[in-house]
Amino acid sequence: MAIKRYKITVVGAGFTGATTALMLAQKELGNVVLLDIPQLENPTKGKALDMLEAAPVQKFDSQITGTSDYEDAADSDIVIITAGIARKPGMSRDDLVNTNAGIVKSVCENIKRVAPESIVIILSNPVDAMTYAAYHALGFPKNRVIGQSGVLDTARYCTFIAQELNVSVEDVRGFVLGGHGDDMVPLVRYSSVGGIPIDKLIPAQRIEEIVQRTRVGGGEIVSLLGNGSAYYAPAASLVQMTEAILKDKKRIIPVIALLEGEYGYDGLFMGVPTLLGADGIEKIYELELTAEEQAALDKSADSVRAVTSAVTL
Ligand SMILES: NC(=O)C1=CN([C@@H]2O[C@H](COP(=O)(O)OP(=O)(O)OC[C@H]3O[C@@H](n4cnc5c(N)ncnc54)[C@H](O)[C@@H]3O)[C@@H](O)[C@H]2O)C=CC1
Ligand SMILES: O=C([O-])CC(=O)C(=O)O
Image 1 (spheres, rainbow, N blue to C red):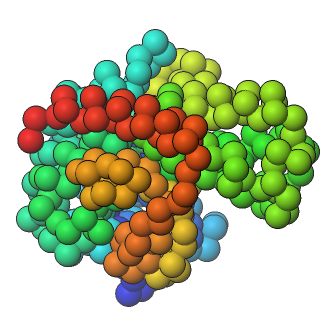
Image 2 (cartoon, protein in one colour):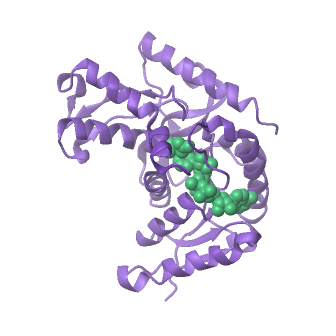
């Protein structure tokens, strides 16, 4: 039975895209269109059909359609872009910039045509620079162009804190600012477990090790997988952002946003805490930072600026 729901298009039906499509359908957040290149149309249809056949077992009524035709994405409420290549061991995310900028731009030109009112969430790496590329190719207002990094980086950080203390992940709070690279900034001063600041619970040296492991968390998975990058936690992160928007939850979560003066940066796309609701990014929160935190953020911003400057619009 097809029920009236939001329409969510996931572009790129690889590891992250397919996992995201299934999680979105399992949560019945909307009907899902999974879109990849024409050469992969049959495998994309096959993945979508396979997911749909899980519906009677898992009891969800979302439709899932596999396609390579952008007309199937027409009037989507949300478009999630996972199209592009992933890194392999020994590569940095920035090594993907030239290939993925071309892919993201061509995807966005199609999205602009068929879903001009959509809110677009970008995952493709290097994601800060790809969000910049998408913003310019789409020409949408800044609140409707959002990059995913902070939900995932924060999830990794919270996982490591919960493991360290052997406590429920549900009670761990924290967030990660800055670019989605090895100099991202987990904010220790704003991290707590059950309301208790983590520096009261974990020795400084161990906190520093957790911060460092978070920074290279993507690389840790790349090394273990051997031929690709993380997809379960990235997909879960995209689903959380989509849910916040479609349910107008007004969640405060870190995402990549266009900064126009906030934190002292102008014209830069980078991860900051935001209010996510029906209009996409409804607000950016500007926190007071210590001189040390601001210096760490400046370093991360320099890296984002460098890779962003490699994108030709
Ligand atoms: N921002 C973040 O936190 C994260 C970003 N990523 C990035 O997401 C991207 C996707 O990763 P995976 O899904 O693991 O890769 P993957 O290789 O499994 O899937 C990518 C898919 O994109 C498709 N694609 C390529 N060009 C396309 C086009 N023009 N139109 C439509 N589809 C196209 C490919 O055919 C492929 O199916 C990578 O760039 C990866 O680095 C992955 C995890 C986390
Ligand atoms: O590490 C990668 O290349 C994929 C990614 O962005 C992550 O998992 O954080």
